[in-house]
Amino acid sequence: MIFRQLFDSVSGTYSYLLASRPGGEALILDPVLEKADRYCQLLRELDLKLVKAVDTHLHADHVTGLGELRDRTQCITIMGDQTKADVVSMRVSDGDKITIEGLALDVMYTPGHTDDSYSYLMGDRVFTGDTLLIRGTGRTDFQNGSARAQYDSIFNRLLKLPEETLVFPAHDYKGDTVSTIGEEKRYNPRLQVRGIDEYVALMGNLNLPNPKLMDVVIPANMHVGLHQDELAKEGRALDAYEAIKSLGRPDVLLVDLRENGERAKHGTLPGALHAPYPGIDDSLKPGGMLREVATATGRRIVFFCAYGERSAMAVAAAKEAGLANTAHIAGGIDAWKKAGGPVLTG
Ligand SMILES: [Fe+2]
Image (tube, rainbow, N blue to C red):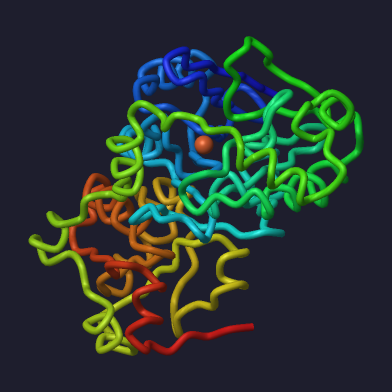
């Protein structure tokens, strides 16, 4: 396994680059915008293809690298269901798995620092975001933070993991890099409380100053979605209502870019072909499945995904591959459902 802990000294942020092998797919957790060059260089050096970029929560102290990495590598961006980010490619909730080639992260909803805080468990290690820090815990005094929720997330979820589980947080300001669940149970001063009320009182008395760049950073992190105006101007975006009207038309071929887990959870569209986004380049090449179907039937491919981001990137990839007559459903199946479109479930 490739496991790199990368540090941004300006914000004290740890980002993690994960892959199962050199030459394979990679995932990055909590990337920092200013470090995008460094990540891309490392990806090239290790011959990795970045396929997913994940934030544990909406950060208040640094601008996320999610949007930049998506624009540079066409990777999928991921945050939790509760995120206030305008668009991410995929949203996850408790119990889901985030997978790349050879690796899987178990998604744990651990609110408290913010209401969109998640932890990710990967075998012998857990990425705790700002929920559980080394000898500390993330503040709970803004972004819908809740000391009560955090107590529950820490005591009833994270501390229930095996004691030897390695703890990799999203930040450290003292120079620590890793801890274990057992170590934090015993030595984290915030966790030496008799119960929830004592923890709530402790967190209520921290009187921390706001992060320096919070007023700039939070709005920036809420506007991370791919700009899709150009596609619409070129007539290569159908809004949900137009898309619903085109359902069943013989000249349209709907293509679902989502993963099996998303299809099972949220349903799919009648008559849609399944072509997961990570394989899109191969599928669009001469001899590839989508290329062949489009050529053989003469139908216009209309891509869709969860929120319209993967499908917008697929339209661009198709154009690049010489397949000009494609479009996507703006806002994805989320917008389709909100517009009352029919969905197949089960
Ligand atoms: Fe945070």
